[in-house]
Length: 259
Image (tube, rainbow, N blue to C red; front, top):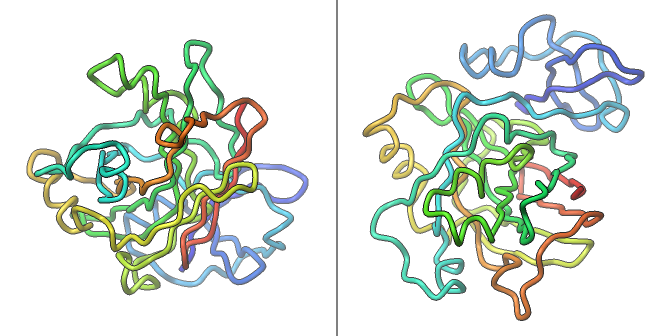
């Protein structure tokens, strides 16, 4: 099941629904987070709209967003570092959430804005994996380099567009064999399989859960592969007007402009 939050054609209040091919069907009541919490997979039976006619929002606003650093072997290599011995965990603020279509707003203090296409794990009750989505772990490299804590560099407002919906785990039999691709202005920058992850999804969940109670809707951004802007020669950072598109097999794609 693909769980989405959207604004119907012509506007109005946000609704939750099920994506079914090229249409989206409204749930009679409740939100995507309600569905993730309850585990209810009863098919939607409400008003239907053409998928291309609605405005997709972020599926939900997580209580917590956990980022993972250097979790692809290829990305560790392009930064000149060895893969870490244990997961590198940081957090992004809930206010960093943005719709899959953006925009991503560049703070005035940032001069080196970068993209990181990532597989997002969406948690359900008891820390179980409930589903997956596509995310961009937007990063201010200048702040990241000069500030030991990455809260400002990674957690700024709009620095976590994700979606376009949550694909429930039963539809993704092997999340560690998916192809991830990122384009900037139509140029392919990242192309890798999630099989290159240093730490598997169960390992990441277990590591975080050693100290933090995981709740339904929490996100884990599992890391990014090689091809980020800072590692190119010469480096290629994002500028206002650029468009980032990220696609993952079986999960769809997100595309957002930089402001």
